[in-house]
Image 1: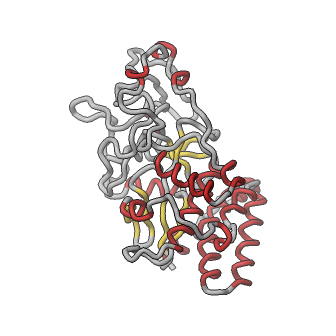
Image 2 (image 1 turned 90 degrees about the horizontal axis):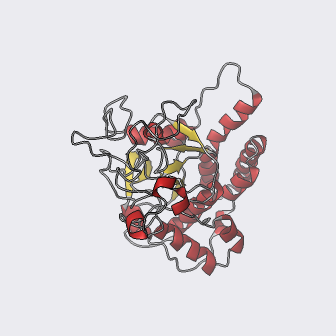
Image 3 (image 1 turned 120 degrees about the horizontal axis):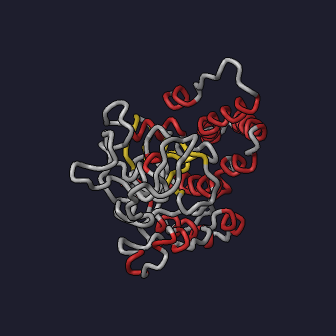
Length: 341
């Protein structure tokens, strides 16, 4: 099985600390979840229970048991039979094939799609999940540098409000993103629309290594940015992604936050805040905003890829992974899909 070959092989350091081993073992969770669902689909309940126990044991050692327990919630009881507010056909159209059985969404998950998911939870009276998946409020004006906080609303939101339907959802927890993926998985697999491309799939967050692979796919090897070049501006001086040109930083270990010698406005790149999910040019494989707009969650909790609208350019490079606290107005997420059948 190509999926298990790709994601169950992770070389360990020769003498890693136990805590490092425990957190590296979390990389096995997506593959174990898929294997467990395959057993459930075949009626092999005992094997599925053994895989569940193994996954929960790994999660407990890494202090992530509650999060993984949600991931492993029994699919048959997770989503009740009901009409959904989520347009699964549009969702499927937005997927781009990265490997034979791996697809990535062309877009960061939008406010519109996430609100449809919240409406599903409300209709299903899943108030427990609504509490987990809430969107925390944001005072957008307060997030601007002081010199720009007196702008009018028309100036601040000239390129759209960050809470508009087509802007990426932000200010949610890592746990919420996992619940969203689980919900989509069961909705898709239960759907019987005739044009559905696959019989059974699994939606999830990408691993760090997967995210980097997808960002580089079709580009020049070793290029720091998803568009394949070494610079964040084109020949005309236009910025190629949505980050914060007002700030500078030269390394991951010693970030030098603060105005540059000749600071540019935070909206010099096209927006003070997150812009629509299909802004800027896509990668060669049709992925939008892999660099900038919002930093994107990955399976590894507390880490993000791609950088966001609040970040200096350094963090928008493919090879840079950043540690974050969630929820954050700078962080959203993008989904990947594994094809099972």
